[in-house]
Image (cartoon, rainbow over all chains, first blue to last red; front, side):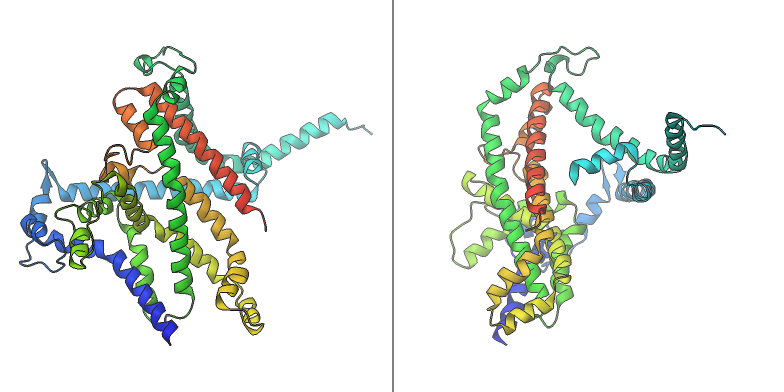
Length: 110
Length: 304
């Protein structure tokens, strides 16, 4: 039983240490700079404010929505392309492992 | 009756094989083209630039200077120091990352934890969905001397202040912790996948024969983890030899060059238009990474 409790304790401590930066990030998003500087450890906003989100809604004349759409478009397209291209390549190399120029690559690594 | 000429027969066979493989060449073509265009070509160009004078490197007819850039960087004490620093950082970084990942994966796999496994996995895997830049920005805040959470916590516990990113002595430790936070999940994941296929009957047999749990782990489980250790070792070596993002975001190579690794120094040189020397450094780093990774791959991948 002691071993079980110790194991749970160790996992809990590690997990909380890993999660702390997230908790800090999320709570800081709703706090003012002054509040963050005054009490760096605090995880619950004194007076929750979404002001920061208003500030980043438009940066340098470009709206946040536009930036997000860019991210989605880039990741969507590149995922689609790379899946198609690597799937075709992988199929070819699996069916014909000895395909001429690629045989050399295998020779190098195996 | 006609006698088949062996040469013609072989040639016909080859033609038939090419026709048969034609569709497969077609399938592999985009993949090969992209690999060459975006993978091999830039590397070759970069190596080519390392043999030209920086001032003319980007012109259509660069001035060739042979090994002058390599002579220059090996005469540069800052580069030699950054090279040594890179290797000195990589060794403990690889060891701590793999040791932590192995311990945590073993803990999660041990069946000692009766609830909350998903939570414990999620906590460590969450950095996957975090952009590395965002993660390191948060860490830079946490390490802040006056307003950071790390020092506030230490003060609360009555412990001495941690220098964080401000002191040369602690900056390496600080970025090592931040990098562990960001990278450990990959190694944990690989160890967990390997632990899932470890033969538990062998462990039971060892236990019946009176082996302690430490002996079980050392002599039964660990040898079966060899594939995961090999993959993680090679990957971690490559990862930490190339340490870059964390330096750009958190320290800019400082304080007093304490975190100025080869990749960052080369980037700085490139920024100040020293293209020849920058690419020479990149080439040296590339050669070192390739050499170390291949050696580790061959040694660790060999069956015990």
